[in-house]
Image (cartoon, rainbow, N blue to C red; front, side):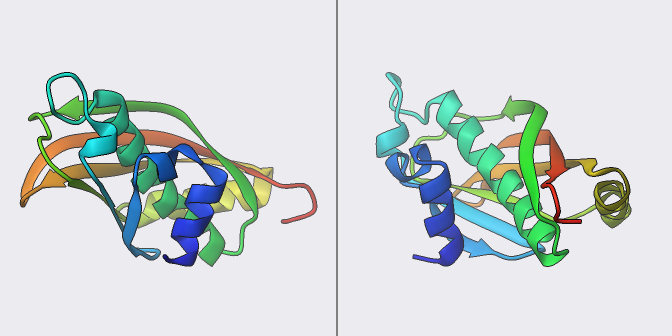
Length: 149
């Protein structure tokens, strides 16, 4: 188990119950996996709330790792999101978040350094057997912790 996986399971306990594991996690890409069984619904597909949680977690983890790399100590929360479900997820699945808009990231970190808070949008997708199953976009807010700027 990686350090970031231990952190996620300790700080967000439901992720352990959901069976979420970290496949890859760095400042450019976060890839998570989750099994069907603890996330199953009455139709024998992934429950929509579980899908949204894993998608949110992938994007949140990417932002968290980028904040750590920038040496910014913050409280990171989500302020809004949207999710699209393209197909039912019928087996173990993966979530992928990739760093994209670097100009937006620069504005985000500058805002934290100047004003003690910043907002950024991050996205992720859910995959099963090479097919995109769902998409997520969330707006995250980072609030600088006192004495850490």
